[in-house]
Image 1: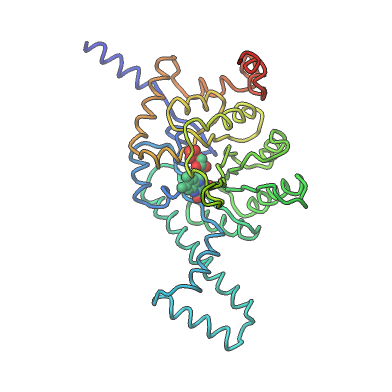
Image 2: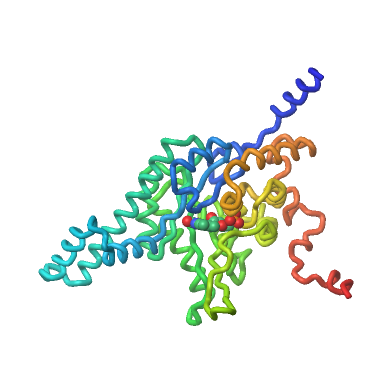
Length: 357
Ligand SMILES: Cc1cc2nc3c(=O)[nH]c(=O)nc-3n(C[C@H](O)[C@H](O)[C@H](O)COP(=O)(O)O)c2cc1C
C-alpha cells in the first residue's frame, strides 16, 4: 500500500499542466475570462488561490464612459452637485461652447473611469501571482491606443481587445467591416509592447481567411468566441427582451469546430471560449488545438471553488491516457491531425437526417 502511495505520488509529480499563452507562462490552461467577476481584487485573490492559470479583468468599456457622463449630468447625489454647478458655470459663462464643455466633461469621465481601471490593474498585479490580462472595448481608434498604452504602464501582463462588430449596416461591405479590426490592431501595436489578443465573434464571411490574416499582423492570440448579448421576444408583453446572459454547457461546439479548423494553421495562440463548463470540455478544446480556455458563466452558476476540481479532472484524465504534458495531446484532434478532417467541415446532418423517420 505504501508502495502504491509512493508510486501514485511519483506519477502525479510527472503531470505538468503548464503552458504558454500570449508568451506568458501559465501553470495550467484554465483562464477565468473577462466579466464582472474579475473586477474585484477579492475575487482575483480567490481565483489565484484556487489555482487558475491566468485571469482576464473585466473590460473597460467606452460605453461605460458615456454612461458615467450621463450619470453625472442627471445625478441627484449631493456629492455631484459641486461638479454639476461647475459644469453649468462653464456652459453659462460661455467660456466654452457647449460642445467643448461636453468634451471637457467626457474627458473628465474618461480619466475617472480609466483611473479606476488602472487601479484595478495595479492592485491585481500586487495581489496575485498569476498573469493578469486586461481587457478593453472601445469605439474610437484614438481610445483603443490611449487605453492600451495606459494599461501597459499600469503593469498588465497582456491585453485582450474585445472587438465585436455586428455586420448589420446595409451600407457596409464585409471588407469595410473587417478593415476596422486591422485598423485597431495597427494603431494599438504602435503604442504597446506587451502581447495582445483579439476576442472576436464569428460573423465573418470568410472566418478562416480573416483569422489567418489577423494572426499575421503580430497579435499574440485570438479568442474564439465572444458570446454576444442576444435579443429575445416576450410574446405576452410584446416586448423585445434579453436572452439568457449565461451560456450553458452545450454551447461549446461552435468554438470547438473553429478551434479545430484553425489550430496549427494560424500564426498566433488560440483561446477557446463559450460554453466551457467542465473539465471534459476543457480537454476537448485542448485536443482540438486550443492553447488555453476561458470560462465565465460556470463561475456565475457555481463558484470559483470548482477550479481545483477542473484541474484535478484534467490531471486524472492525463494520467489515464498516459500524457505527462499538455503539449503531448494539444491539437491531437485538430483538423490537420484528425483522421477524418471532413467531420469538422460538415454542416448538414445528411446521413443522420436520412435515418430519422
Ligand atoms: C455577466 C457577464 C459579463 C461579461 N463581461 C465581459 C467583459 O467585460 N468583457 C468581455 O470581453 N467579455 C465579457 N463577458 C463575456 C465572457 O468573457 C465570455 O466571453 C462569455 O460569457 C462566454 O464564455 P462562457 O460561456 O464561459 O460564459 C461577460 C459575460 C458575462 C456572463
